[in-house]
Length: 248
Ligand code: OAD
Ligand code: ZN
View 1 (tube, rainbow, N blue to C red):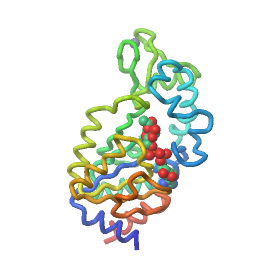
View 2 (tube, helix red, strand yellow; view 1 turned 60 degrees about the vertical axis):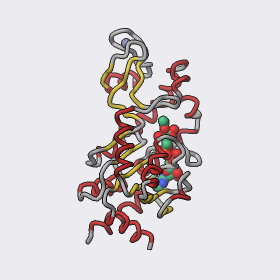
View 3 (tube, rainbow, N blue to C red; view 1 turned 90 degrees about the horizontal axis):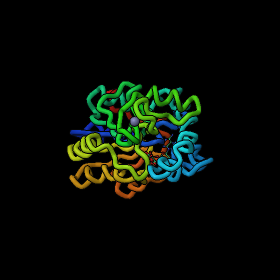
View 4 (cartoon, rainbow, N blue to C red; view 1 turned 30 degrees about the vertical axis):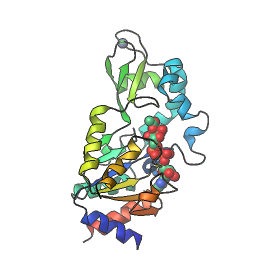
């Protein structure tokens, strides 16, 4: 069946990598972006509130939007899908984990070589003087209902997460691109693959005769190109695939 085929793809890959999106953290209670009734679309359009241009105009609206999400993220724990990828990685079946998520849950599950191509919440940057600050300092102000400000110059602080209209962190994305070039299998989990350039990474592997394995609920932009697509909940499917790969 499909689970066995998936396990065989992983077992026989020379160099497998993963690309994950918001869907892998949905079972941890963090809403995704594009599911119907996703929490993130309820009051604001993320494309609007989470763009660099609108952050510059209305940082307070951005922080009102992200405040509840941050609390959810802080309390979230890795789920069996994150754990399955960590188990495959620990056994040497998976190399880089490229993630579009900013929640840090792959690291929390024990994974290494995690490439957060859309940034992370561990640090922030002053929009005025460029000073880098610890995330804790920034988030304490956000939790207190304020717009976080730079200790040096009073400028507005932005967390080092990537907003729409912003360039991806070059060093991290370059490592992700190289991993996609080296790989002969990409496992996509919980992403609609709607947002370039992260969503184009599997095409690099495919262009070099690699395979694409997708585990997702609902369609993705690359279903047509998938070697195998498994329609299902990542927290159910990934542990079963990992069991098949590892129980041999
Ligand atoms: P999306 O919300 O676009 O896609 C998440 C996918 O996961 C959807 O296809 C869901 O149906 C699916 N899904 C939800 N729960 C699932 C589950 N339990 N098991 C399996 N699949 C599930 O999120 P991303 O693809 O991550 O970027 O979105 C990419 C980028 O768009 C984000 O990183 C963010 C956003 O704009 C920036 O903010 C720069
Ligand atoms: Zn400053």
